[in-house]
Amino acid sequence: MASERVIRSGQCHCGAVRFEAELVDDLATALRCICSYCRMRGAVGVSAVTGGVRIVEGEGFLTLYRFNTGTAEHFFCSRCGIYTHHQRRSDPLQYGVNVACLEGLSPFDFAEVPVTDGVEHTSDTGRPSRLAGVLRFIPADDDATP
Image (cartoon, rainbow, N blue to C red; front, top):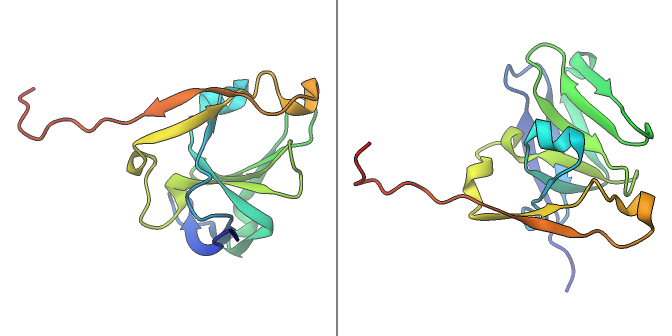
């Protein structure tokens, strides 16, 4: 089956950085990671196709962060500090996009999000990516009292 490519609009919190992302299989690629950076960042990401992130406005506000091997490039707004997207280490031709920056979406729209093992990264081990677990969101019962 061919993948469903969808273009979604996104922006950082303050709106200085606006972008379009052409996603692979739309939201079906949602995941989190347990590497040291992703653990602290806490974002749910979806995959964009090669060259699939186009900055529409505010490219000058984007700041780049690299760590460890320096392969992955993590972009965030220098004004509000929100992570918008990153170029992946496992596939430097592909981008991960912060779901929370995409118009009309929230990380809490996903009942379950797979969590990959970025500590034992496939680029270091030569083995396929490993599922570290699943993050679940269970909405509170509206009738529950605090």
